[in-house]
Image (cartoon, rainbow, N blue to C red):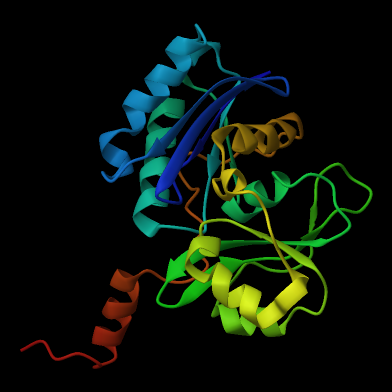
Length: 237
């Protein structure tokens, strides 16, 4: 099964093509411009490197977030357009699930953190049990890192771009309980998105192209401002 996985939920986007569980081609978009300016070109490059066309794919896997509101929307709209054009199924995964899946089996708790701005991180807790994939133990949440640290009383592996922003704080608060993955694992890879996507495609858990939406966890600034305006919180003068 050939699946193209796409993540645009963080500033470092990624596109990965897998065949079965083998990575055929991968590209990292770690640039200062928005993903909308580079995403289609990067997808084309990944496919050309693999000698693969869109019609050859068995499906698409897209990271639905949480993460950058704009980035996630760009990824979702791009995949919707491509999937509609070639009539291929789409499955969606959480960026936090993707990050956790990149950690090798371990007895420690796994806690991916994505910088949510406003002094918060998106996070969830995972642990390897009987499966070869870590099991999510909590809901997705947006919270301040100091609140997150107070929820932990065991050795925990952190990864994700939130480590760059809050890693030193977590180390100070948690001491030896804080373990940090190698920096290369802080990126949610497109190939990891695709691997999780294969399992969903095999189970037939495909998305409705007309109806699926990003996983935001919290409302965007635009939505918050709108609701505050409706409630009379802002002056329109």
